[in-house]
Image (cartoon, rainbow, N blue to C red; front, side, top):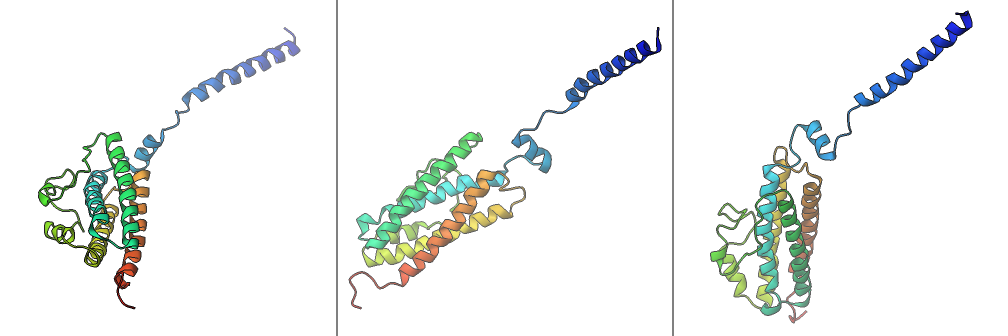
Length: 219
């Protein structure tokens, strides 16, 4: 065999080795992780925690009471600005209840019904409440006091009690963020952050409304 032929065969052999080696290298590359797998690999924790579940279940009960309170405004002689605030609360918190129920259902957790009832016999034992009122929720006595108020008295009590209620929701958000491994799920984090921002803004608005003179009073 001539020297030039040997060089050609050697070149072909080297090329074949390189070509064969490339698929082997590609086959060794691991498949990309899904977002859930990456989160679990990075943190060593599941994408949500028991504190997340407790927060969502408890906040359903919390929102349910607020919807009942705000729903009394038209029949209890609330003034115009209180009526508008109550209408916003009813719509916003009903929507948020559906969001929380959907999240719990998707994660195969117990989904409480938004069935807060008055008289207060319906308060105890609601799913997610552990037989206790969540922070800021009105006691049976406070609910009775609000239900029996009318006109300016209702406005004053509603604003006072709803600020208490909102402050309780902020406490629940704080407890969530302080819990080990909680709020790692993006939807939980965004939802809790939105609840905090919205209810802080409404507390400021209600404080201003509470300082206004009652409707129809002399200047």
